[in-house]
Image 1 (cartoon, one colour):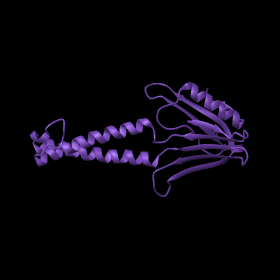
Image 2 (cartoon, helix red, strand yellow):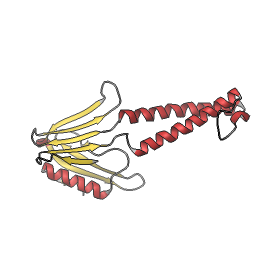
Image 3 (cartoon, one colour):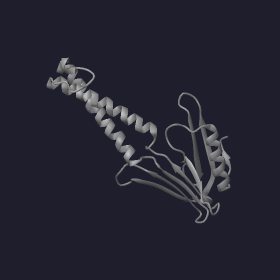
Image 4 (cartoon, helix red, strand yellow):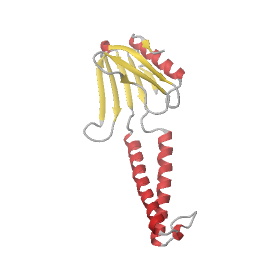
Length: 188
């Protein structure tokens, strides 16, 4: 999460949110693509009787059931890899949080999946914001997130989905936002 303010005044606070275009997303999509391609080529090699792989000889596999199952794994993996690459291309979850004192508006924007509701945009008055809430849950699946508590609305998540922020980064960002908005910081 990158925080930037308008250099001419303290009237604008904009935070960029990283979506699916993270290093870990690229790594996972690459690994799934390589694995799926290997399984698919092994299944095809078994069926055609021609070695299509450099590092092994799957022509010795009996097509039914081994080659067939490897081909099905390769097909399923290829579909998953396609989904992962499209999610990265569309940058699902990416966007920004913008708080503008000049207009008196807060804008939370995220990219979604293509279709009718590709852009997810929430706008509210700064006067409707009650507080900034920190959500901490430790354990096997830790959760560290910032939420915006707004009148007559559910709490609005401000941080990215995925790897949780460090406690110091979460506290620093939450305190800076609460100070900018002039609202209390809850949850610490």
